[in-house]
Amino acid sequence: MKGLIERLTEELTRLPGIGRKTAQRLAYFILAMPEEEAKAIARAIVDVKEKARFCKRCFNITEQELCHICTDPGRDHTRICVVEEPSNVQVIERTNQYRGLYHVLLGALSPIDGVTPDRLKIQELKERVAQGGIEEVIIATNPNTKGEMTAQYIKELLSPFGIRISRIAYGLPMGGDIEYADEVTLSKALEGRRIIS
Amino acid sequence: MKGLIERLTEELTRLPGIGRKTAQRLAYFILAMPEEEAKAIARAIVDVKEKARFCKRCFNITEQELCHICTDPGRDHTRICVVEEPSNVQVIERTNQYRGLYHVLLGALSPIDGVTPDRLKIQELKERVAQGGIEEVIIATNPNTKGEMTAQYIKELLSPFGIRISRIAYGLPMGGDIEYADEVTLSKALEGRRIIS
Image (cartoon, each protein chain N blue to C red):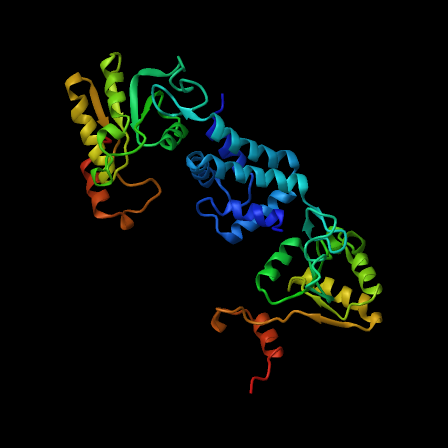
């Protein structure tokens, strides 16, 4: 008979970055936790699996038909920030800098992996823009090959609409050190320099 | 309204060593997992909280009255290995070296923290030995101040029974480097040297 702790340990090792030892430590921690807290974790896991779906408009994760950002009248509905994944929405939200809407592509173009435009929510983005009322689309796909390709594709797709299309800035990460910056980032940072006086 | 992912992220940060970023990464991973696997994790958490209890004899974690080690007729019932925590049992079991029984103290002596002998399962160990049939007690408490104090206390408590009482060996950790060993470990390793020719 396999023990309860062994079973929980095994289940936890399914998670990324959780090896056998960490899983065991977590299992014993859970064993010692107040019952209500432990069950709240379990419930949150089940809820995510049972209730999460994509927002019909922006493809962020939500429990409703439309997510809490799309339905918020206090947000700027003339701006759409395009990201690859729902997790990117959360990251940008945490900056408290952006008050517009989002559009989650659910991936990035990668023809070699079979990810063509029709596999992403690109057509849906075009339709949102075509409906009017949008003044700016900020493309916040990743600064790597796939993300750049996707940004380029979207830029060309949306240019007929005559709206402002922007790309998030490249540059040195805050708290970083020029000494350790790679040359590509450094040249992008120079290229994107801003007048400060 | 707080989102499902945000809630799961928050719940996961209750776990030790899981910061906000790791929790978020795990939450999105769980979101993408097959439903059955995610629910198996949740179920294992709930089961541990609802079904786990201490073995009446050795205080290991079990679902039954007695744990699977205490009830295994194939084990050597003349030996008891004394450990501080149930997790230590699992660690020793994984060596596949030991075939005897265990006794979990559920802690180590620490008078300064109010952990006196009556707060641990020490009396219960004495009773097991007093019932007879035990030939050796191996003390595997931690090699630190509390563990040493506990080992010493148990040694004195059990010496009247005239059985063999042993302490696990101190020495260099396997795969380690003498260069990096602290002096206490190194002198213990020298002291405990064994003739090999």
